[in-house]
Length: 159
Image (cartoon, rainbow, N blue to C red; front, top):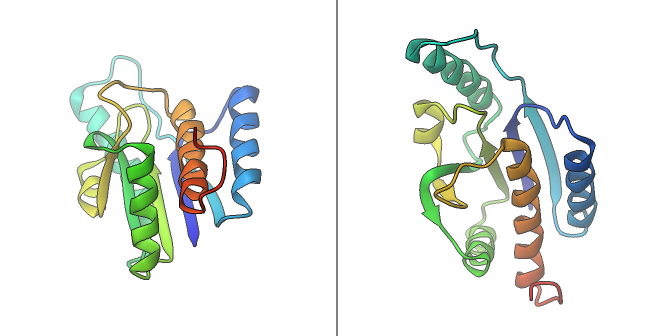
């Protein structure tokens, strides 16, 4: 299975880069993983709602340009559906059984995702009703993808 993470912004702190590197290394045994960083669009000080919307649209266009029609797209959104670790594992397994060989997870920037990206999603996933920094979400997402593969293979780690 091919797993791609499209994430707006760079990982600035070493501890996030280290966490992402660790889970990326662990995932090599389970899938082909690609992480693509989308450049954050500049936002002026004291932006208007229109300025913020323009940023989301620009970042969204970049995200959409990297998604193929055959990709199964899972966006991370506060208003998405919450799943347990087991349910996410079942979802990933069901996608593989259904012949979906390419899953793209999308993590938006600090302003969230554009409506166009949200509409392109095949599934909207929520980790919580709370807002998390997108750098943290990248590490959490990778850990949960890793956990899903471990669950699906009935390997020790999950509990």
